[in-house]
Image (cartoon, rainbow, N blue to C red):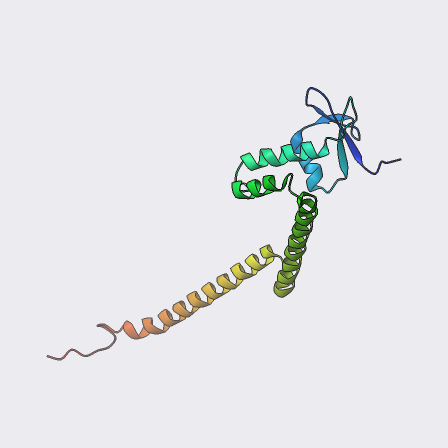
Length: 166
């Protein structure tokens, strides 16, 4: 019978062992579990202590060091200031709710955008490309037709049939 939570054991050598697949995994693979919305916990292999938060913070720390960080020094300083403050207990739930509101608004925006456009961004790009190609072909046909109409008149010698006065 499958467990509700996937258990990952952390050994003293810092290796992570996924009990569900009976294999060692990397921190990046733990990150992928998060991205896949897998319900898991990380436990110390010897003591059974819950190390999930510590491992998640390690993943955040590694990703903050690479590329474009999400957490500015000012934001991190503000968070640190809440430790020991009388409002510390409210900060975690507040941040969770704020992030959930942001995610809900983002999903709502995507849904509205897709319904307005009635299609995915790639389909829109393809449609715009096809429209541009049709407009280009129409313009070329117009130029060729105009050139074809001018050519027979201009073949009679001289420029456009103008008489020379002298």
